[in-house]
Amino acid sequence: MVRKAVIAGNWKMHMTCAETREFAAAFRPLIADLPAGREVVLAPPFTAIPTLCRHLAGTGVAIAAQNVHWDDQGAYTGMISAPMLVEHGVSHAIVGHSEPRKYYSETDEQINLRARTAQRHGLIPILCVGESLDQREAGETERVIHRQIEQGLEDVDPVRLIVAYEPIWAIGTGKTCAADEANRVCGLIRGWVGNPEVTVQYGGSVNTATIDELMAQSDIDGVLVGGASLKAESFARIANYQVPARV
Ligand code: 13P
Image 1 (cartoon, protein in one colour):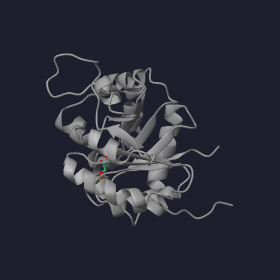
Image 2 (spheres, protein in one colour):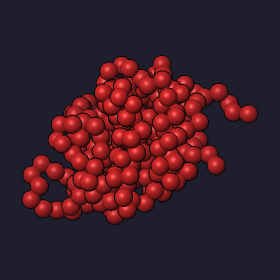
Image 3 (cartoon, rainbow, N blue to C red):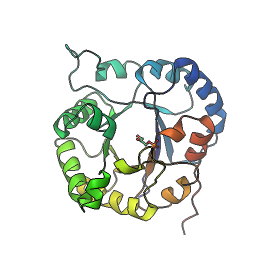
Image 4 (cartoon, rainbow, N blue to C red):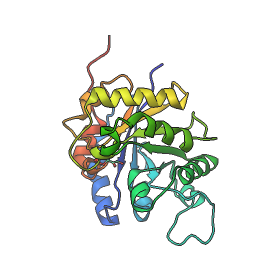
């Protein structure tokens, strides 16, 4: 079984619609000849979703939301529901990213509700998990991630799912986790999810210099890229990663 590689970009709170149009125009030709078996996903801010969908139509690039609410509608000022995303052609939703966990105190229970709601509406959740530097240094990496997986995936279908291992200390810091260590943790995650075919990504300072080694690892099926996904040239190089032929 060869698991599909999923190369995803998370734009976070970057990119106006005008910048999105520019990105799409530059990105299109650069991914025209992607090798088979690779999927590219981009998560723009909510406001740029319609623009990105329109300008990447026909390329096969899937569009993700950066979060999704657990209710379909209601008095939740500032939030976006799954039906609102589906209406625009969104197919994936990031849930449990360390930034909303940190800045908006999202809990594993809420993240679980988001993942379940996403699946109920046909969206593929990209569940992010990962330890802080303190937790890593205290030897708690496995315990923390196991809990995030167990609670985050309660009653979630392990087939229509992507999990992204994003060590918090590697996000936006320029410190990529060593490829063999990222591979080790991704392998543990796969075991805990309980579906050997689940796509497990690595995220945290992925760039054009580190992508090939990361994608050569046996348990890393893709990447979730922040900063390096904001430029068409660097994200296209990442999507066009090169791995040594396996014999
Ligand atoms: P960076 O690639 O900028 O470190 O961000 C990673 C990330 O948080 C993707 O979701």
